[in-house]
Amino acid sequence: MNEEFAYELESDKPFETVVENIEKRVSEHQFRVLKVHDVQETLAEKGLELRPLKIIEVCNARFAHHALGKDTKVALFMPCRYTVHSDRHKTVVRLARPSMITRMLPEAGLEDLASKVEETLKKIMQDSV
Image (tube, rainbow, N blue to C red; front, side, top):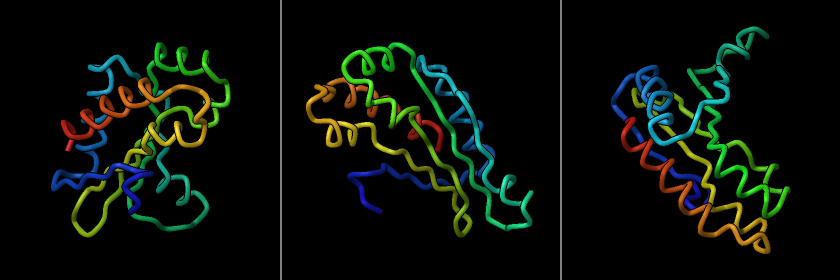
């Protein structure tokens, strides 16, 4: 996996435990869960099989407001997302790095904000696995 694009951790904890941990810990850092997409369930509705996979969308209103105030194109990368899936008896969590926004929109001046958001979201992951 390209580490510039995503931050990844593995866990021996069960899939649902990791999902629940992330959902709980985001609020401890003034983020909120906007939506949890159960990709496995959605595909199963169409008769397609997939191992457990959830996409957890999270947001911090203050960070979002600040970023959007600098450049509304940031909305293309919002909200922040975790993916959680099972892989060979492990639970894998990935975070699309907010710092990648600074590469896509270098003129927006979001380096400090993106770095702060990314560090917070990585901490949530580390505490969840």
